[in-house]
Amino acid sequence: MQWTEFFGALAEREPDDEFATGRPGGLSPDLADRIADDIAQKLELNPDDTLLDYGSGPGVITRRLAQRVARTTASDTPISILERGRTAGGEIDWVELDPGATDPPWTTGSFTKVLSYNNARTYSTHQELRGPIDTLCAAVAPGGTVLFGDIPDRERTGQWESGERGRDENRTVWIGRLERRALDMERDARNMTEFMARLQRLGIEPPKEFGERHPGFMRDVVTRIFRENGGEVSVVTQPLDFPNAHTCVDYVVRFQH
Ligand SMILES: C[S@@+](CC[C@H](N)C(=O)[O-])C[C@H]1O[C@@H](n2cnc3c(N)ncnc32)[C@H](O)[C@@H]1O
Image 1 (cartoon, rainbow, N blue to C red):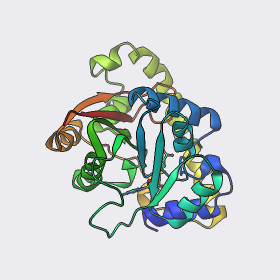
Image 2: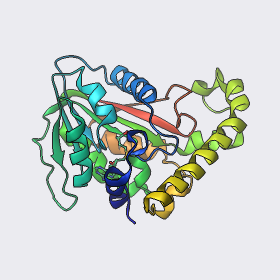
Image 3: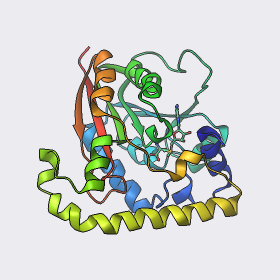
């Protein structure tokens, strides 16, 4: 099963909203609130903003963000995801993405804030990232911001696995990380085992990469693609208690022109 089909099947057959976005440990209402708060802060959302959530899934996080801005557009590919999102309500315009189309279904530069969250795991090579990143950059208005969030990070994954000290950002929490490391790895493995059993009960076979750890993308390469699009990049961490904080980073990208 391909990634898109997989997420489409989840939206169709997984009755529990917590597991419909494909996070092995689930997305509880409390976690969704905290992720939305973190995104709103990093994007500096304000009531005048027009927000695009690219690859929104059924909109569990989008709905929380929509309350803070003037207008919200959610976009995804499988129809089952759009239907589930529309049914769940919220002041959101739902837009279908056609993977075969050359142009996106919105006007260039029409959003002050653009989000893509927890989507990059579906890409395995840096080259595959270029298309989606170009799309995000084309969608944002001059002076706007893109948040490319929850992105598997090679450096962070390596540090976590080796217990290495790493960059300044890690120093203050390094001891805490080492203490939590064994625990979190067990948690990840347990969540994945339980989620696989859940998928089997639903008759959904995930892409083979789903059960494997993503090696992570190189920050320099991701940063360069954004810079080539005119963005000014900050690589930032997630709160430590987020499920992917030990393997992922967020890219906050500002556009002056
Ligand atoms: C893990 S879900 C995350 C959904 C949501 N952003 C969240 O954080 O809850 C990944 C979503 O990304 C979408 N997706 C994957 N590849 C995509 C692409 N190339 N363009 C747009 N959406 C994509 C999938 O259909 C799926 O709904």
